[in-house]
Length: 289
Image 1 (cartoon, one colour):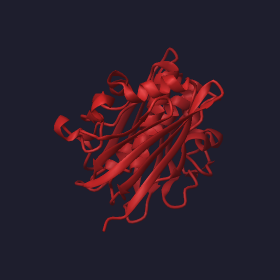
Image 2 (tube, rainbow, N blue to C red):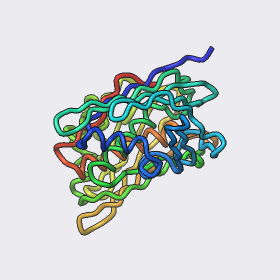
Image 3 (cartoon, rainbow, N blue to C red):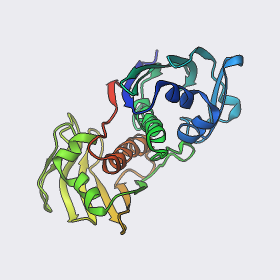
Image 4 (cartoon, helix red, strand yellow):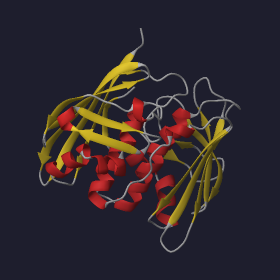
């Protein structure tokens, strides 16, 4: 029997409950922040979504989801078959001041296998996009599950509406790292210096290359994996930055879904941290797969 997990994520959105519920339940809105295609019909108990931005990149015929709960401005629930298992997704909404507190619960998810992406990462990325869409009509990135990267490296590119100095500070200052990726960051900002996220197992180890506002590279270790290298490169001017992340050194045929979706989540958070500023808060994850 497969190990099953539950993903729970909380976040606050600065938009009224009715606006958030509409973004969760109209086909046009879902296509803007969540899936490539969507077709929602409460009258027919359907909550359909499919395409390359959905895990397993299903076609339309595999994109049917039975709608189980549709309580306007309060709750939404639907079935979702993933990893050959029947799972259940629930959204709960409640007012919080002028905004909305959202709880996502995804139950019965088969645990991720080695090198596979987690649904905790998928939902964190998606809900950040929901918040960005409602608060600023912008989203960060969506993972293309039709092209999960394999091989020696993972590469991600993102455009950030902020100067290189601010972006580089978010990569090198422990206080900034704590806000979006680290649990106990330590940084000795020089080649050969230590660089750690303070994770319980694995992660960054030592700075290999450092050019302020241009490049940061560090070694990376993880249990049962060879040592690899993470390189951040920054380009741009006029208050905008093009950020490239390359994580290299994997085995030639490795399935890199775990790093592709995981790094996309963190690059996405970095973008919002820098663009939004002091008011930005990462989603709270109660449990994960």
